[in-house]
Image (cartoon, rainbow, N blue to C red; front, side):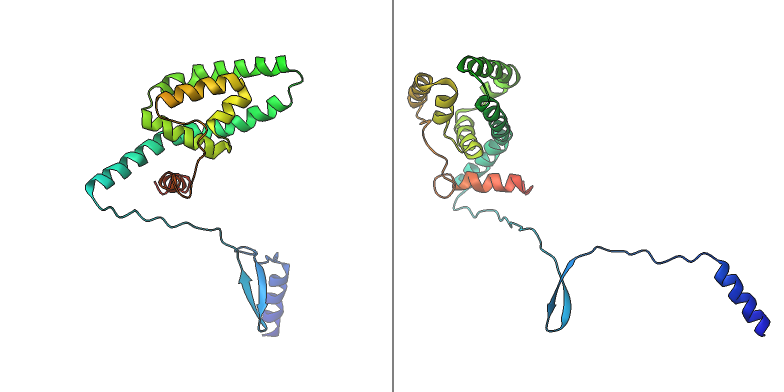
Length: 193
């Protein structure tokens, strides 16, 4: 019996030993009243509910606004990204001539890529696009034109916009006037719509 036990022990000790591999994730812990509790920070989650409408007309207005914002938001997002990229390059331009040359090059590139698509936007989609560009860049359309093309061009385009009832100097107001647009944009950014 002892021989058999020693024989089994010799076989077991000659086999390679495998340790358990740890599974799961490593987290921080807090000690509360002598008890160790895992501490995990979760990202903030926004819960969206559809608004209640007083009439069918209000509901149609909301649905149209959602369609329009969904159509122009990608352009506004792209404008924000491009603005940051171009702003860095323009700030590092050595001369005013180099800066103007670069602006013309960028303007040509953007016209070739997006002019046809932007020309097909409706009046209300254009207004929403200008507001969202302000949201993305932190500058009104007037300020962007003034910084990139000069005061005269900003004045010209402001006058042209006023003919059609829009003010390029108007700032995006996410808390009051543009609250519905902001709500829709946040829903888009969170993947809710």
